[in-house]
Image 1: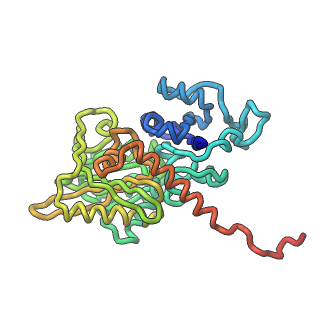
Image 2: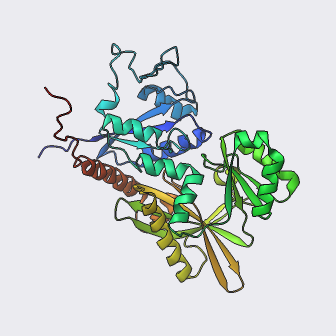
Image 3: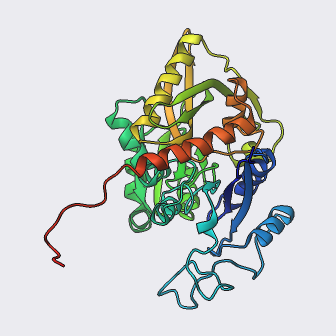
Length: 379
């Protein structure tokens, strides 16, 4: 009996994002847990400057926590007029290394990884990859577009508005008046295209508003202002699948700080995850329903984590959909895999299912006809 050939899985991590360091943890966890009998994990680090490193340099990066070195499989031309992915060691052949991979598992969080850009590159190269496609990735990354899609679907959200950095610099007084005329304190100010709570500030009074917007504007040209919900708990639900997704148990987060910020997510060990969440079964079922609806609304694929605020007032519960993350944190202690673990799918099995979903979606795409009998170009 012949031994089954292992699939070569490229693990993309790092990237040009404020969530660069978070990606290291996810990549290390995936490589550690992936089934070595079925897959050969190939680490591929991307520097903050956009250089793609060889597997050897990428392995060093995981060990040291630093993406550096000149042994690149890819490089940019010295002028930024043209930028290619070219192997310096193979006479300039384009994509020589990536062509040898069977599937890509991106754990690139934030811009240039979770926003559809890397997905578009992989689509052009016709390489299967884990997770959502270009459109769903772009929509989920851009909180403004995401909220508009959810609004069109009638999904429950808090009050919100979007402002642009240029207008903020030109007319800050008008913008503050607009915010205070539409949203009550406390409120949250966020970069529109970022995750992991990078650049997020809770604002309790007017004096804190301008500095919060300035902070968010460091990371993005679009800034989201959201109404804060008092007496709330933060809960999350994981989604797995393509066209017929399944949902996990609902988990509750008790952050170490006043809210679930970057420090509470990745640094302070006092943050607690409670699975299942301490909410009535009827409320949990509604959260699961909304999670699936949000996943399908943006045409997500593979995986997503859907985040909620649940406000308890007397004996009633009010659910607010916060956001959907199509490349959620993927360490062994991250909420996405922890929820599936409690739902009966272990970490290694989860990785296997995601790879199979990627291959399934790629096969479905190959059914698309790309030829049309046209007489526009005669032979």
